[in-house]
Image 1 (cartoon, rainbow, N blue to C red):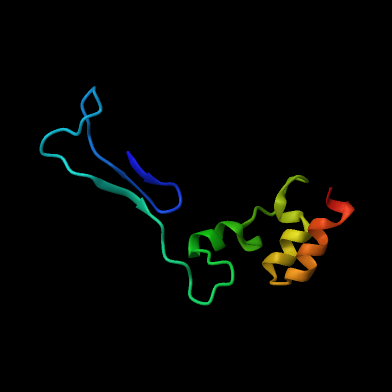
Image 2: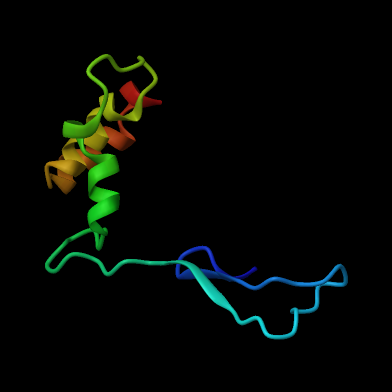
Length: 92
């Protein structure tokens, strides 16, 4: 396997020494999707989906980060409030 965690991963069958097998070629396991246009966080659609309150389980654990006020403010686009909440003693 080869690649970068934030770009792509590729693989190729190898022998026990780690040398690529003859007749095989490097294949993509995954590639980073393009960020959505005009997205202030430069998230992909998948990243937005897994971070959304809409997709969170209805009963969250008390430790779930969805419940943090700084995270909620950030998701709503209120960066000033998010920064304030993140640095307040309430969350530390």
